Length: 102
Image (cartoon, helix red, strand yellow):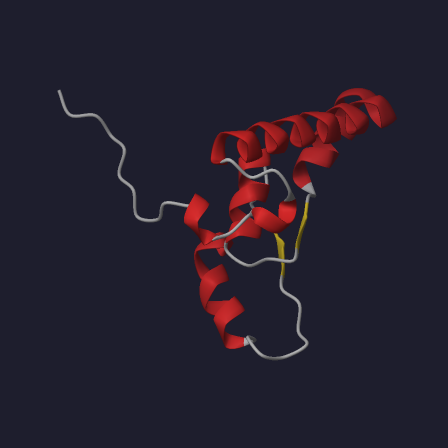
């Protein structure tokens, strides 16, 4: 997944004027939070927008964007971030295997 390569890309351009954006794999508001936390300046959202467009035209796109915003707001609240500027890598746990063992 592209987000896995993000920290390495961000590190490679550190100290330059290059901004890092991620395009692909963004489906949820939590994906947006993770990308920003790992150093992306912004994200592009393609497929969910097309799904909304196919479902209900302009209103479908508006609904998808509203859902993404709501999910992002909830994710920020759950991580204790009150603004985008407060988002950092500490809110992301990498390499977590959360499968329950019975």
